Each structure stands twice: as structure tokens, then as C-alpha cells.
Image (cartoon, rainbow over all chains, first blue to last red; front, side):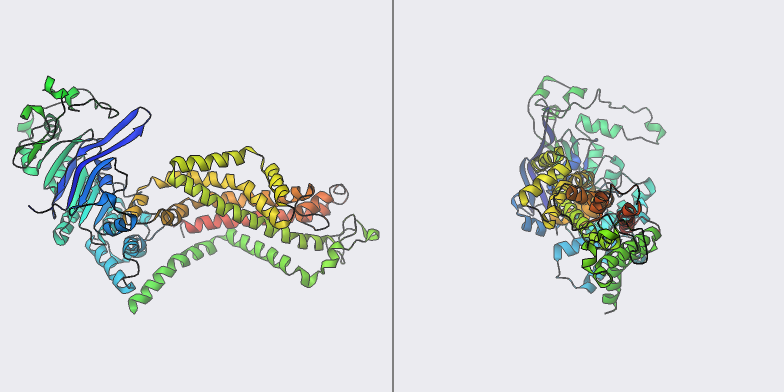
Length: 317
Length: 291
């Protein structure tokens, strides 16, 4: 078996709060092969962004491992990490706060090269790379001297993309890159991301709460609930045979324009998300689950119930 | 080669743009002209105004109204007021600017570090700042000056220390709002060190309110220098300095108002000019300003 490009082993991220430990990310084991996209879905506050930030070491991890090409990067020194960032980058959610308003597009896009490669590139090479990536991302060359506030949201997000892509990383964490954009622009950005993936053999970890988006772009999907992975499968498999009650509820919440599906059964979880501070052991979804039983109080792990289809639920023991 | 040139012009154009925006700001340019003329007049004073003129007393000629020989009149000891104002400007203007610069740089560093790193660093630094803030600035400057010993340099240091808390507070609060923004994360994602992030991404974006605070404080510093002089600390008579000139003439102000007006106008002009320049700089650094 080949080594996955990015892998996490028992990744935990807890925040200390006055009320106790907030379990933002708990025991996440994921594998992202080269050239593939892992979609991470879940509702707001389920820890998906924290997971992405933890993988890039933007936030310190409580315990666990993050492996890049089989090497644990959590013990890397600052200098080693700087090397590592040539391979992994991030695209941010808010195109308005992700770009320094005082820098021109040229400076914004060339800064990663200057930081990570120093003076090893001459000015001509740098110019070429910046202009090439601007072109690839659909930004006219004439924008090089513009400031971010002169662009609309979609173009700003293209700049964010160009900045992440200019150093030709192998892995990019996309933290809800389209959720701040309107639908027509969303499609443009998603297609751009997929084109870049094809051309450059990128891997993505695509964080989103939008199931249609994740269906469009992902190869594998991981569903998170309160910091834990509840189900993980190939995209087609997950949409065809959702197993975990939470996944079923999520999928049945996708609005449909098909009249014949009007009276389909809706899985509506009851109640609200419980507090992630010092959660009780066992299934986090149990208090809201329509199929709850005594077994749900026990600890459980993701289990492979079908080839490549993992689910964390006692119903499938 | 063509690329090289284009890039050069690109790099330069950012600065050119700032200079251009600044030069378009009429008030700011007025400030530059006024301040420039005053600095020139003060620096060139020895050329047209011998130093003796300023300390030479002539009691027969005291409280002389403005005349051709004494353009601003004379004070109660018969000393030429124009000479005193010009030589006094050296201490008031340059001392004031030096004080502000030191307080500004130190305050930016302390506030920047406290705001960016947060946690224990923030708590420790800010409690120290709170302690400094609890003491009235003039009192603290007096205490420091007494400990360091009298002298212009020590006066500048002590006044600067007494002003650091105000800058540190302002800087910290703007850093706090900026460090949570995603472009700071993005910068960390391509390996920027914390120092670089503060210097390149956070301070330039938070500089506006800090520059305004600095320019507004300058007037206060000039007055502080004189109140320290009044208390016999820092600059001692007969060395003139704008605040001191006003305070030593205050008994005669009722009959000879020109004694207070000249140094007063000087303080006013400097504060106003620096204020305009500060506003202009803030706008020039902000690319969102229309040009």
C-alpha cells in the first residue's frame, strides 16, 4: 500500500475554558491520498476548521500525529516547518480579511515565494511565476498593481487561491473557500480548484458545510459531529448509502426541487447540539438520535462496515 | 532586462504612490512647510542672532514693545524675545520630537508584543503598564529625572517613559483586533516569523490611531518640558525654552501680552503642523484613500 500524502493519527485538539475542556477535535484519523480530495462536512462549530488549522500547525495540537508523506510534522522545528509549508498551504474562508489591504496583488502573491524561497529566484523568474499563476487563476495581468479593496469577492478569492498555489504545494487545506461567495461565483471558484488539481496533481482537504459543494468536488467525504468523525466513505457510497443517523439527517436536509421526492422521509434529529465542554463518553449524537439504545453510552470507534466505508455507530456492530 | 525594469518601477510605485498621495494632501503639505520653516529658522538662528543676545540682560531696556531692533520686544530682564524664542525652540521642538519618537517606538514594541502573543506575556507587560499608568505622568517623570540626574537627555528619557503607557495601550488594542484576521494566518502559512508579521502586516494596518495619538501628544510634551523647567528640573534658567518663556513672563502678561503670544504661537504652530502631517501620513499609507 502506498503512503497517503497526509495522514492524521489520533489527532486531538482541546481548548481550556473556564467550564472545563472543550473537545474541538477528538481522535481524528484521516488519510488523504495524493491527487485526491477529502471533503470534511459538519455543522458550524463541529471542529472542522480547527482540524484544518491543526493539520497546518496554525494551532497547537493537544495530542496525536500529523504525517506528511509518512513523516510526523508536529515535531518539526521552525526552519523545518518553513520547508514544509512549500508543500502545504491554506485557502481561507473570508476573502475580505484574508488579504492584507495594504499590499498590491503582485506583492500579495509574490510574498510566499519571497518568504519560502528567499533570494534563490531572480526577479524575472519571480515575475514569470506570479504572472503565470495570475493567469491560471483568471486574474488579468493588469491587476498586478491593484489593491484588494478594488476587487469583488470572487476575484479576491482568486487572489487567495493564487497566493496559495504560487509555490506549487502538494496539499491545500480549503477552509470553506466558497461559502462567502454567491452561487454563480462559487461554481467558478470550484471549477478553478478542480482544474488546478488536475493540472498540478494537488490534494485538497475541503472543509465545508455545503453538501452540494462537497458532492461536486470530493473523492472521499468525512462527516464530523462535535469534533469526532462519525462516518467516512467514498462520495458515491456516502450519498447512496448513508449509514450513520447523523449523516442520514444531514443528507435528508438537502432541499430538493424534485416533486416526486416531496413526501420522502425526513430524518430530523431532535433537540440541539449539546455542549462540547467535557462531553459524556459514548456517542455524541446519542441525545438527538432516533435510534438511541443502551449501547450508545459505551465508547466506540470508527469501524469498516463495507470496503472503504467507515461508520461510528453501534447499530452496525 | 525589460522585466527587471518593470519590476523596479513596480516596487518604486508603491512608495511613489504614498508620496504622491501625501503631496496631494494640502493640509499635510501646509504642515510640512510650516514645520520646515520653523526648523530652518531655529537651526539657522546663530547666523542672524548671536547667542549672547539671548542671555544678555539690559534692565534699562526691559519690557520694551516690539521695535525694529527687537522684533518681538524684550522681557522683564531686557533680553531679546525673538532670540529667546529661536534658541528655546531647539529644546522645545527637538526635545519634544525626540521624546515622542522614543515613546512611540517603545510603546509600539511593548503593545505589539503584548497584543500579538497574548496570554502570560500580555498579562505581565500590561500589568507593568498599568502600574506606570497609575502614577501621574508628570510625577513619574519627576521621579525618574530625580533618580537619573538633571539634564536635557535625562529629561527626554523620563518624559518618554511617562508617555509609553498611552502608546502601548493604543497599539495593543489595535493589534488585538488585527491578529485574529485571516491574513495573519496566511502569513504564518508561508513561514513568516512573528516579528515579521507584526512589523509587516499588523503595525502598518494599525498605525492610523497611533500616529494621531502621537501627534496630539506632542503639544502636551512641549508643555511638560516647560512645567518640568518651572519646577527646576530638566532645563534650568537662563536657558530658554518655549514653556519656560511663558511661565517666566506670566507676571507681565497683562501689560505686555506679546511676551506670551510669540512662544504660544510657536507651540500652536508646531502642534498643528505635526497634526496635519500625522493625518496626511495616515491617509497616504491607506490605499483606500481616493487619489
